[in-house]
Length: 208
Image (cartoon, rainbow, N blue to C red; front, side, top):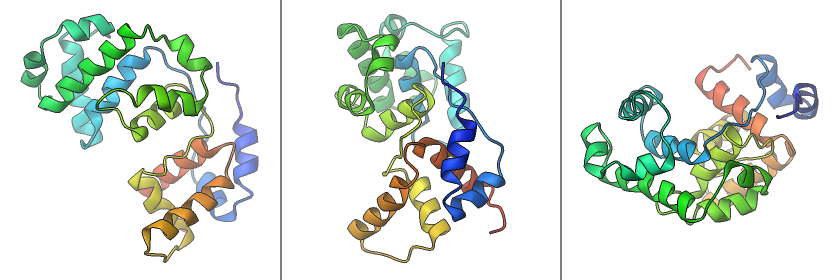
């Protein structure tokens, strides 16, 4: 279980006056661990480049193939790519979900094993899978493994949020990323929470 660190993360992140305004405008949340990491990876792959609504519809169609139940990795492998394409998967996504499940089975990867690994080792392990990039694994770290200190530098929404909140004018990409990273490091060890506040604010901005 993830310990309740609401007070800890709010106290630390509120030292940043700009972020404090975002925190005060949103309800607190608690990170939780989720089971069946292979399935969460498949879900994340399905949602890429889709709106939240469309991604949810596609995932529900996926579950319907298995009578509405969460399938095992072997069940996913045993389902032909043509079946997945028939419910709206692209060729690539049909291939990638098979890659994920095959990798988990062949390497005997368990949820318990991943829970014990540090962030860098989880990224190094899972990005070996074709179709799984660093951003996808970072989302797994945040929302499946419940890691408190993750900041996805390649996430467009987070970059836009930081640029807007802090009024960054830098246009040269390398310098811009350095500025964003410097700001995010101040939020450690609670960068996952800061990311959530930024994502929520981007969708529902308070008056600053």
